[in-house]
Image 1 (cartoon, rainbow over the protein chains, first blue to last red):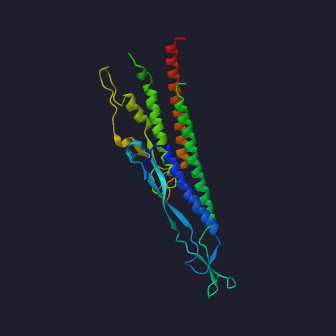
Image 2 (cartoon, one colour; image 1 turned 90 degrees about the horizontal axis):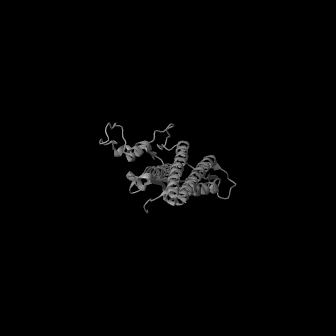
Image 3 (cartoon, rainbow over the protein chains, first blue to last red; image 1 turned 90 degrees about the vertical axis):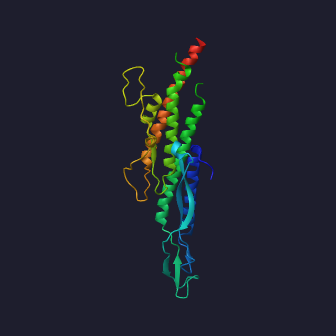
Length: 138
Length: 128
């Protein structure tokens, strides 16, 4: 990845990471309640893995940003439901419900959107300060 | 004789430091969700004293150097979290937001001081 040079790199990339997080939450919520005929096929919620990316001159300027380096499936097990009338039930009459906890996803969505907003706020503030600095002495 | 540079120097340095601290606080806010990230901060007071050329040693004569103790490891320090979190992240958004807003206000203050000094110089140059 390119070098982290200024606040636009810091907050911009952190926003991209939060967006990945929001995307996984959207996928999880979209698949909540879906039924599959085997445990393997059942949907498991996706979680992004965040990592800190430090600037090359971290020791001098202290800059770092966040990056979503990977997306992993959670280890929560799909729920086994006895629904013999369901078209996708297996030979014993069981279906497997997606391993998504809606409440958990909602909380995560709130947190991700708050942190996204925080980064927007940082950029807006620093942009105003930069504009004022440019017009210094006028 | 004091040069124009000397006239503006202190507030210009303050502005640079404030800008650097803003970048560090922005990094903390950017990493609010990263596990094991340790929030950092800049010791502004110590840094500005170093630029100002004054330190903890008292100079009793004009020819004495006012030594500022330089310790590169103390430039950036780790923040002590008030409520430690399970994932090892020490960013507390309320603290960071507070520091960030305070720092941007202080940045604007330094900018205002600079503007005033420039305005003073300009009126002296014009002789109005």
